[in-house]
Length: 127
Image (cartoon, rainbow, N blue to C red; front, side):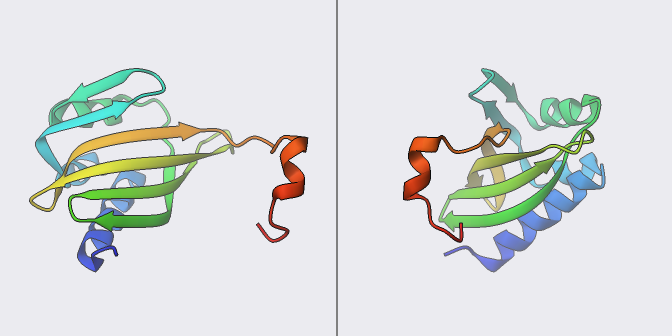
């Protein structure tokens, strides 16, 4: 079960990011944050590096939260990542929490693709 205060904080952090208020967004992470993107092999260490990366992003996406799951010091956030070229990627953030803030963030993201034909017979008709 997700703590309502945590869910509210995640939504506020995402709103700050979407509004390009990166200073406000950075208050939701610890000074020693480790942010990892396994698909590209990127690792950023520290709140300052994470904030600088966001500020340098040429055309950052906006995010829509689809679902938040939390159990203790671990949380998963599913997002739609909307880009200026009208594409929407699906993203999952795995968050590690300490003292109410994010100390670890692992992000997986990718563009949607059509299900292969062989899998279609197994899909639910209403999604």
